[in-house]
Length: 356
Image (cartoon, rainbow, N blue to C red; front, side, top):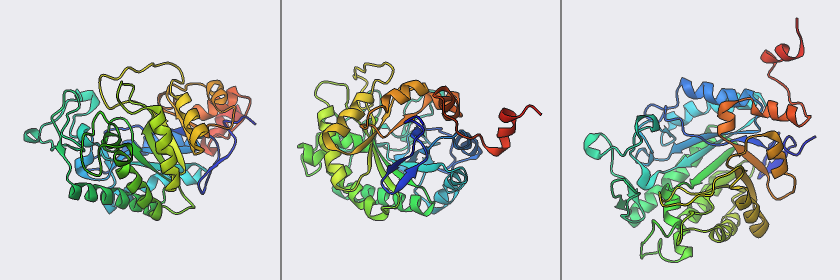
């Protein structure tokens, strides 16, 4: 049995394999409610053999959406509709997670296929917010959050996690990457506050740590709590991999089970060195120097590559994005390539085991 298709336990959750689906925004919700598109999209990954399917970033507040069409988890109705995903996943032994998010200064934009530009409040958009009134390049300047605003956002994240539990998700992932609100707080590029949430490293990570601590109280030990971070800003004077190691230690102390290691997104000035598996070493370093479990993500495309990444004991799993979009049954193909076999759904199995 390959490492990729062996079981792994994270927190209180045992995953049937280590081939996981990354959260990928579909921008196809209506008033935060997922639609038929999502049922087909996630259903394909579930029946394709993934060990974990992570639902795309779900906004914790309507003003925290990237676009008008983001998934949401700020109402009970949204959670009730989202519950269909873990219900279906569990029929196939797949675990379901959901990423909860606030877009911060990168909110109120159009969909990628419509140009991705910012939609102004006068044109039906809304005012973005951030730790400091520093605009993301090409966007409207955000409004600086007050301490009262920060307290409300913290409560929004906790309420979203409670709804995720009511919907029977196995994993809650706090989105603190890619230049969105929580990343904006801990990166010195976007946070120039002078109060308790700015300045020192400890102050800049304070909001994320507070949110993680409070969410851990509502996500029982039988489930798992992940945090996705940008391990580096890829820009001089920005957040670094050493900062991420220090943050990982703090998050582990607050009950976080795994760090989902991505990178970038805080500035268009970033200088990313892109190549196959280009973020893997971030996951390896964070685990080796903090002890917390990590997963790797980024241009992981084949079963052989994934198996090589997992060869040691320093990375728990791989998250696959574009390769899963191209082939939702990537795990079945990867297992075959590695000499393993994972079952097709009964409805499809006859087509691959019999010629009658």
